[in-house]
Length: 252
Image (cartoon, rainbow, N blue to C red; front, side, top):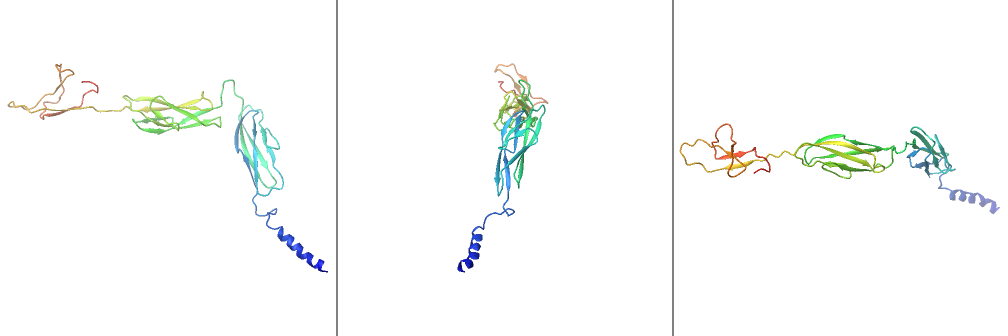
């Protein structure tokens, strides 16, 4: 009799000991993720996808695709295409699913490349020393790296261009070249404004002691012995100070 009476108590302990787990339909969140979530493949290309499970799943992952074929381990094979095609890859369990997108590129003619570049902004006007940030957008490849160069001025590896001081207004080309395909590049136009510098010479002299002086004329020449040309206009200069603003840089 004692053995029969203790059996319900032992069963109760067994039920308590099994507690604490996540039962089907409980609060545990069941999710599945896929890596990579996006990919670009050539026609008939192959790529491995990976599914990661979290939460409680009572069976493994099943794979499916809208174009091409995918194995039970997530190895995807793109179909033969003649135009750009989008395929969806789905990893599914009984309680969750996730989809990745694959862009399939058609075969290219010999020597051709699907890569293209654009630069923004496409044209700017800058003063000497001014800077402009350029951005290159690369399509047709997962490698979006570019190399920057400029025909004048300086440009950083990140596309920040700084105009150099120039004597006359100059057209400058800022170029971005694809790291994946160096034959592909794009250019932006920069109008670099001239660096206008006003040169001048300040003159002063002692006043003349001659009687009835009402003003002076100012002459300029490139040699001590001349010839000279009068440069003051509009009449005599009454002061003993004069600023010559018509001089040319580099001339005596």
